[in-house]
Amino acid sequence: MINVTSAKLAGIDAVAVSVEVDVTAGLGIHLVGLADVAVKESLLRTITALQSVGFRIPGKKIVINLAPADMHKKGSGYDLPIAVGIVAASGQMHLPRLKDFLLMGELGLDGSLRAVAGTLSAAELARSLGKQGCIFPWESAPGAAVFDDLQVYGARSLTDVFRILDSPVLADEFLVRDADGAGQQASSGGEEYLDFAEIFGQDTAKRGLEIAAAGGHNVIMIGAPGSGKTTLARALAGILPPMDKEEAMVVSKVYSAAGKNFSSGGLIRARPFRSPHYSATLAAIIGGGTGDNILPGEVSLSHEGVLFLDEFAQMPKSVTESLRGPIEDRRVVISRLHSKIEFPSSFMLVAASNPCPCGYYGEGERCTCTPGQRLAYLSKLSGPIMDRIDIQLWIHPVKTGTLLNGYRMGTEAGGSLKWAVEASQTSAAIRERVIRAREVQRKRFGGYTTNAEMNGRQMQMFCPLSADCEAVLHKIIDSMSLSARAFSRIVKMSRTIADLEGVPDILPRHILEASSMRFLDRRNIL
Image (cartoon, rainbow, N blue to C red; front, side):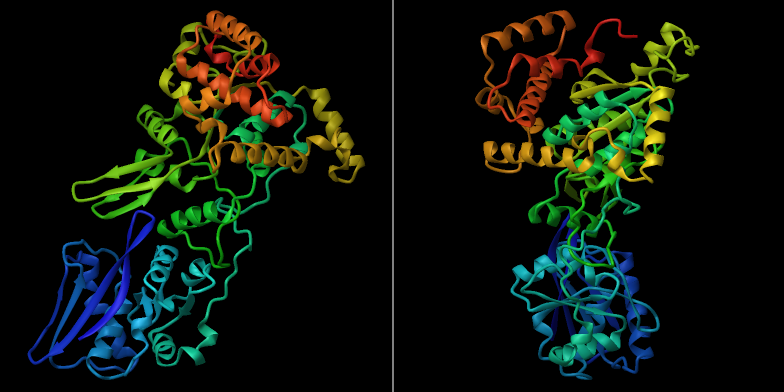
């Protein structure tokens, strides 16, 4: 009997699966071990692929067991270990090094290998099992080549796989080198982010986004069409601090589990920026699937990054309300009849919305909506979801004079950022301030917690309020009729503003600035 090590995904982690192949007297090929339809169909693919590269199918009884037998197996990644197991068990090749490798891959009828999801998690599992290496399809292998003490091979066909197993020392051409630090982008386009200095005006909004980035706070921007909400959100991703290796590992595992492998290899180093359409379904946002085939949604794909939801008030209420759990718990649990999968979902929510159906309330006489229509529009966003958004910014269109002045200065500078009014307002300078504030928080909490994630006990410990601060806060709460959660948001934002300023204690001016960014809590705002 031959035993080939493979793996299956459970969330973003991999679980070992032993593909046991035994060839004895008898007839037929039997596959056991709670395999789904895709795995059972793999027998036809595997037989045809083996014959196409010159191997024979023994005229005996072949029993293939996927262990443990009480765990459902899904997907096409077992094609490769089954094929290798049949060849080794039938004595057509002697593969003494087979026990040192973990194998995953889908086979084509011509013996070629096709990409599979979850190779990074599988490589991490192989490392924990003490394996010397992994063999994956060529397209999937680079995303798993992140461990110095694990050899990852990329094969294009069954023939390549047997060359690697026959003599790994002579198979260096298939060895995928560690490309860690390549700076992969997790956003869909991988584009460079817009610099804050290139955005004309909007100083208040830029300040609010700087505070959000420094403390990991959620933001909603409300303003007329064309006021720059989307532009500001995309620029925000450029001032976030870089991820450390632990954060990059988790983000890369999420993308690997979703089948979004990156051909350049290495860990994803740029924080994700996800911007799904407002018509996205609940499953697309939260994650889902059928049976065991559960994939991460946008809240997990934006882990450690930004989830930008434009036209927030237009999204289905079931979708916006579903964000309440992930925002609070920093994780999402998807339950099905036979399985329950947990994905990480610690993200910054950046929402954008028009103030009314026509979109022009607050911009002179352009609004054509009635007071009732305006109230009904933003009332689609419930109190609980709004209380989970720390910073509320009203974005007004930039005045024509400011636009023309900025455009003229940029033209005179030949498009260079040297025309920026202040060097301190470039994304690079803001990012440095954000990094310093995050470092203060890391030392304060002894880990990766941000001010936005503080619980009640941590707030009492790290956010003491002087008598003057209490007096200011008391007046604000009474005048704005704030909820307990809104109160905690103001205190957390004040702590972040103090960290940006580099002072140890929260001061009254910090509370005043924080409360100015909670305008939706005021009565009769519309």
